Image 1 (tube, rainbow, N blue to C red):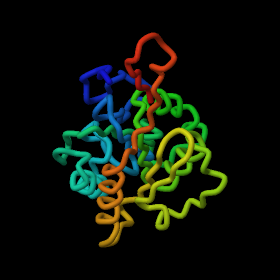
Image 2: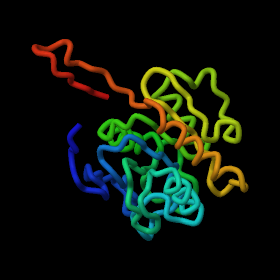
Image 3: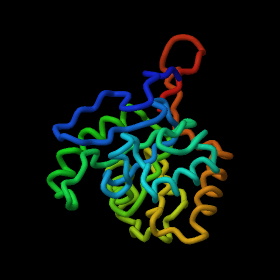
Image 4: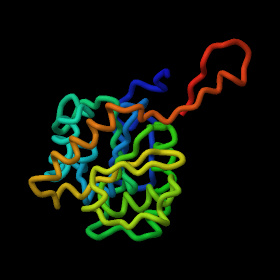
Length: 209
């Protein structure tokens, strides 16, 4: 599959109507898409890169150990990974309102569909609930218990989802559980693709996500 762009920072030039925002960052042809809440929770206002606050670096370390980041820091080097937020605008000293989440959801949705990753890794309860409700048929039968869901695979139609507990709430087990979960997943045929070549002339496969 061909890359749509080589840009790592804000590859699709998202421009929400707010003064400060943290757009998506990473491989625009990623297999794995890490989804956070907003910059006030998961950082990035100083660097312009998601997950670059203290708890974000804890997550970065696990992603690196699992092979999804080549390097960590303020400008991590992704390995088939994309990082973004449900609410990319910076909150103004308070939790964003539901109407603000609703307004910015179109930017997140556009990035998610442009990336078309095989695996979504929502971080925290809000991101997990949104991903399950919007992109899977699992929400009705899944309790948002982040301790129980952490690093587990939720399979269904559409995306494969691996929820992640808030890194600021991790104990000594959560890092290894996430690394083990991702490594186990990567050892399987996790790609969600269909061969549309059978509908055309010739015998060449045409794989789409």
